[in-house]
Length: 582
Image 1 (spheres, rainbow, N blue to C red):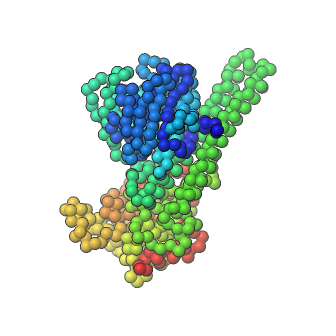
Image 2 (tube, rainbow, N blue to C red):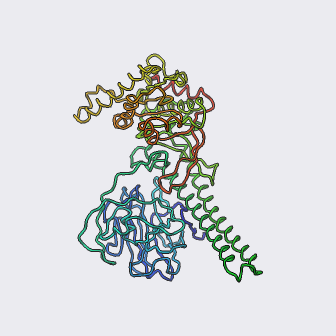
Image 3 (cartoon, helix red, strand yellow):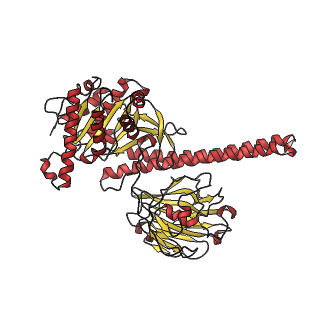
């Protein structure tokens, strides 16, 4: 019989059972309440019925069982398909001491037969009155568990408010405040207000669903996008799975960094106490006490790194299997999907724009995938490299974007006033090309004509959609990709204004934008150009640390996709995308 797995903050593990029994044990367990929240991929509850607590002991797939220790039983097969995760909470009433003042508690996870499979000691708590102990979440067709440890000083009311359910008089605790040293969930957004007339009491909370806010898509300079909305196709499921793997890596890394910071703080405090106390400052025990503090620090750090290494080893195996199933546009250039590649018959849901890794695991790379169609412009920032590197990056991106669409599904329009990019795309510019219907614009007049044509296209699609007459477009449903090289060279304010319009209104009409240019002239240019740069997904041509994820704000190292070393591979993709071989 294997011993139960002891989880540290941020650590996750597969869950093979169809059921989960979550209980909180310890000397003070009788003073605490256990509850669960059923949430979607944005960590939001859909309604008050998605909270299982003392006044509402059951929901589909979740039941609060009476007795001591308090526990919740989950039937994973019975959970609604809209439920992406179950958050298990422990809390104390407002009149009781905070969790940090109680003897240590432990969250225990048992299988359907009652066998203990994992546990998570709730350590380092201070003023929290509610803590998300563990999260049971979907991973494709399977389930996983994660130790969380996110604390809320405002108790259960604050915790559920942070996840979309409002409680009367909860405004004083609207924002989560964790004093635990290793809180590993992203800070939730405050929900919209839904007024209730029933006052809050410790045992009679009036709960109402809060209006769910729109998802916040952070500008790419601040991080990879949040998980995409649910979909039904295989490609959409693969895109969500990639996001979930990256999230697990982010949470594990955030837990490691928090644990190391906690160990550093404990050691520094212990050493400071030795110096501050006259009895130990010069005594014979100082050296041994200092050595003991260093050993404890090294032990804490080593255990945290061991957990992180185990997490990433597991995720690496999961990622290797996952990447074998990715379509070409989302796969590495070395993947089998590129060998003998032919244009797809259905669009891919995303495109790969580079790889990500964290400082603690430089050899483990995760794909950076963006959903299609692109809702933000891409900006290949050549400030850190050469124009040749920028051209190579753009060429690889154009090939990947074309590989995401059936033949004729994406029309590439190039504005190249300096003449540095167009020669690299000559494979597209063949007679009867289905991927580049208009020759590259290499003059200001031709560039204005391209911009004007795209503005008219956006206006036409918007008018047809508002009139319910999309059929009037004559079957022209191809998406457009505008590629502007060395922007904003030779662009006046009027041209920048038209580009701004295409960035704002184009995605809804199937128009996507890819820019290249050095960062330096942006800061010296017009406010319109500066705003465009800040709102774009910035893709430097050299490795860069400008990305932080949306879940834990972990810093990621971005490595650009410059395409394969064999240039003929990209040429083959461009030629195949331009010609209807069927």
